[in-house]
Length: 337
Image (cartoon, one colour):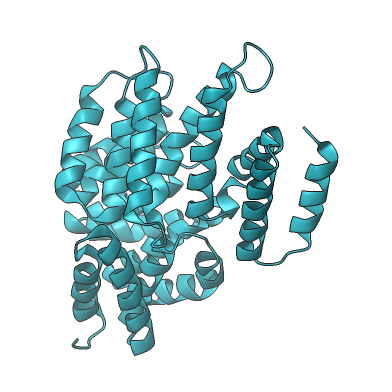
């Protein structure tokens, strides 16, 4: 692979300020490399997107890059040099995160979601002895983001039924994912039962309990554990604030603070973290933020949330987010729709 070409690309990216401009530059570079049949260079750019800068780029780029790279590696496997089986399994590992989170962006069309889902299933089935547990877990996570309760229940059942293997996440991530599902389908007592070792500090990892606090707090509210939720909220916010990688998890905490009638905390969190939350690539975070701040009575925030909800619902072919927003707005803004 041409190191000079990569250095030139890095230099160009460093000169661009916006993520959109960087993504366009990367798309052009990959396309140019493929047209020039410099497939190794194209693969290295894809690898850069999916590794070093993975969380800085949008879902469309990440998804398209993973699909092309996995296909290229699968068709050109070599015994030891690049691309080898280790490179292929690295792509299979990334499918877990891409498929789990692909629906967090409203610009991702349903066709691309279906395409990446089908690709993950195809590649996982192609490896003898590889469990489909991760595939159904990823679909369950995706269903939650798309507001698909029926599909989530079916995929959760398959996820829990199938044997685990080396593709599974750590114990803390597994528990966190299941807690999110249980909260989504309304099994709040079960969610809190499963959360006990996370709350005690027995189960942790780089992103747990950070990503688990929102469903835990929501389940506390739904089971009437209001004082416990109020006690946990500041700890949850402080823990998330300690890790910039998961700062988007503050958005649902703003809504939770409103539900707990801790409006001062909600407003403080919104003011402190709005820029970081809205600077992300996946606009589901934006939607969660504007749903939460709509409670303060600014009609423009409600309209922004409604517009975003409409984009997701149109793609998801349901009314999940519009219904959620309107119910929350009517209850907590003090205004009528």
